[in-house]
Image (tube, one colour):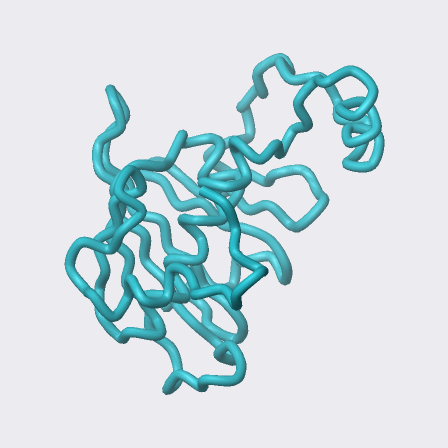
Length: 184
């Protein structure tokens, strides 16, 4: 989800639906398919993002292109497969034989640990600072909320509320024991 969230500048109001085996109160599912529907964001058109987890795979021949552990982005003109930690592959290969990648415009990362040390010493942000990671995590976890309530949910991040399902709002937070509360 991270490359899609970052690259497509996802966020804002979102509709989320999930399916999987019957929910278990004690653990996550062995598989789950989640659809995130993001509306228009400025000049960017609406986009749907599908997340397949566990043994779930998309239907048809595209499943054969999926990396064992990574991402597959499906567009109007082709696909991008990214195995975790590897370079992206453009598919179908024949269509992109002449493709020339753009010049890199982001500096190479010194790694998570060094970014954290640099942030402590200089105050510079890490690549995945809380201003980015918080909203990203919030969106991803909505897949679990939709799965648990068994319905499509509509989420408004400005209100921090699911606008169409009261039961779903009960899964967005918790009541803390006295003395362990978080300040606003």
